[in-house]
Length: 177
Image 1 (cartoon, rainbow, N blue to C red):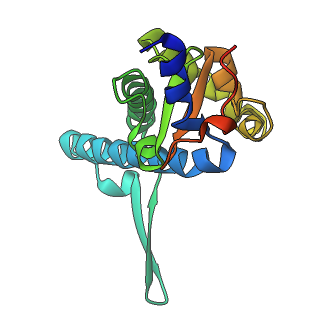
Image 2: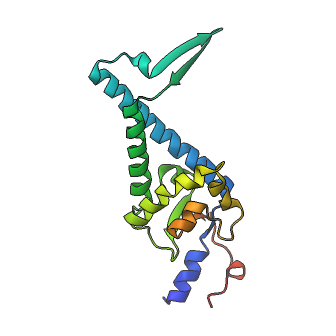
Image 3: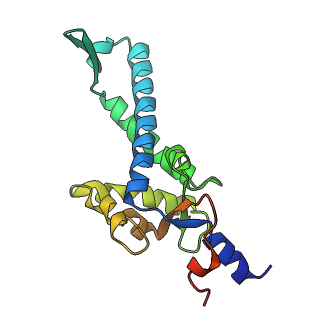
């Protein structure tokens, strides 16, 4: 099979993933990392013999309960390290996606459609800091850039693609010239 034909077949299975497709994936990923951070923080408190109410506060008001979590310094550092490890490992793996992205049928690839290197995934993950910086505008850029790239995608030379249920017909594909 020719390279041009393979490229056209691959192109017919994916489209650029826009902002609103990516938001639920990020929310799910942040929820998973947060739950892990809370678990590690709770284990740390138990191991250190510190009362749980240092980080976890259960409040009740008119038959409703709410749990407030205020992480310890250890929990914050654990969360940062867990986030970095989570995103870099999953996005540079053969899956090319975090669990949140998998749930939304998204993959992260480099500008040629290949898998991200760990260095590229690391840069992409660190690039999320300035993306979130000014009112999350860097993330919102995925809604108006031509290839639906957020600031951190542009910085890492990556794109996020959505897998289609059915391939696009050949007349809807970009020419392979």
